[in-house]
Image 1 (tube, helix red, strand yellow):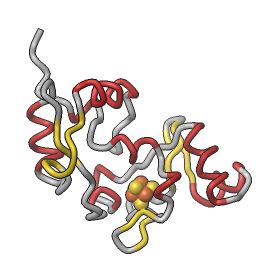
Image 2 (cartoon, helix red, strand yellow):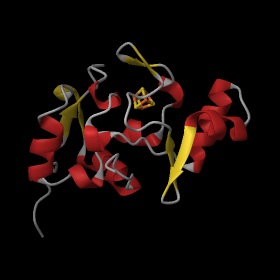
Image 3 (cartoon, rainbow, N blue to C red):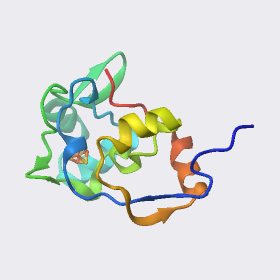
Amino acid sequence: MTKRFWAEGIRFECQGSGHCCTSRGEYGYVYLTRQDRRRLAEHLDIPAPELMEKHCAVTDGHVHFKNPDKDCAFLEGKRCGIYEARPTQCRTWPFWPENMTPKAWTEEVVASCAGVGKGRVWSAKEIDELVQLGYRSTKK
Ligand code: SF4
C-alpha cells in the first residue's frame, strides 16, 4: 500500500483569509448535512423550515447555501459570521477526500490556502477521521 503523504501529520491552522469562503468558480457550493442545518437553525434561533427558505437551496438532492456563484452570505469581512455553527464542510477543510492526493494537495490546497504549514500539527489519525467523514467538495 502506498504510504499516505500525511503519515507524519500535517501542520495546518486557518489564517482567517476568508479565501475559501469567497466564490471561486467551481468551488462555490457549501453543502449542509441534516445535522449542520439543525445546528445552524439553533444558532440563528430560527425554525429549520425558515433556514431552508432563507438560506438554502437543493441541487441534485443535496442541500447547500443559496447563491453558490456569490461569496458566502455568512462571510463578514474576512471572518465567518456563524463560526461556531459553520457547516461541517467548512470545519473539515482542507482534509477532504478529494484533496488527499499529493497532486490535489499541492494544486488545490497549498496553492490557495495560507493555513498550510501554520499552527499545530494534525496527526495522521485526526486527519484520517476527518477524511473518513467524506464531505462532498464544493465543486459543482
Ligand atoms: S459558513 Fe462560514 S466558514 Fe463556511 S463558507 Fe460561509 S463564511 Fe466561510
